Image (tube, rainbow, N blue to C red; front, top):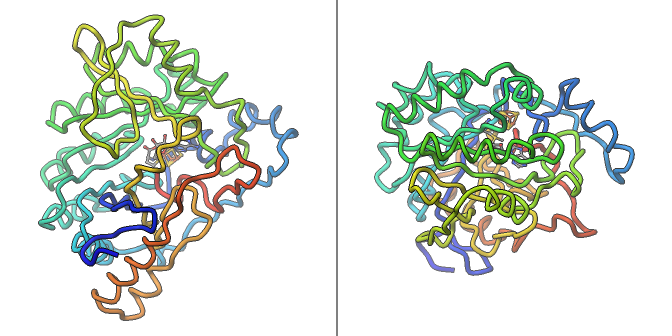
Length: 351
Ligand code: SAM
Ligand code: SF4
């Protein structure tokens, strides 16, 4: 093991830490927390076919287990000492965390952190945008799965399309760059909107990423038939738009990107199911209750909270983190007979 970095046993060096600041959410997306009638109606026909369809019993983490800003900052400082350079705040919905701008200001002051970003559903973004920008947040990624008000409500459980669109506009006005927008594509839910979403990216000059649906929903209702593969997405978009592949300068990028021929906007395709990129993965995650996850699909979580609250020194935490990261899984096993879905949904893991 190299002494000053977080390396795993497969030769990967980790640079990217995703920090979930809450497991709570104000949306109920049908690919993540499918608790609405509309989500159940969609899945009902498919559930009977599932061999292992026991839904996860959603249990919110007790407030006392959620890491304070001091605790999060401490972990990030320790991780930065071992080469972590990128932090992404996520959740649940990160904007539900009271005083988030204070956390952003604390992280922005850590010298080795070069990139500080947040993923949000955008519904509450307008309220917090200015304060987050001033505190030092550099980049924002929004989730937007539909441009149709009714379909947006069906997918997210919330009549919030106007607020999210306003949030995206505001992010650009305030100078967050680049502003990325992500859509999870699900067959028979929003695949008919692929071209409209791409046209939106071109018209608004946005970086828009289409993501394959992964088996991380709390209902455990995912089936491969619902996944629209990255290849199919690209074929559909190529039939309508003149797209040029963008050469990537980041070997750890999870997406392949294409530019529109008129130079406005770009689309990206993230295909973890059909074209896994595990070999280049340089990420780890920390849940809101202080568990380290070395893979999105880990079935084991490593309890940092117990150590940190048990009085361990920074040096102890660093050594522990190095040992945990060493065990990072080689790859996920989606689609293989031995695949076991993680015990918590995406909202609790922190996407
Ligand atoms: N609430 C914020 C949001 O929605 O942007 C941040 C947390 S959310 C868990 C992070 C990302 O995970 C979002 O872009 C969301 O679309 C994505 N996501 C959630 N469940 C997913 C699934 N089953 N498959 C693929 N992406 C998923
Ligand atoms: Fe949707 Fe994000 Fe909330 Fe999950 S955490 S339900 S993806 S808004």
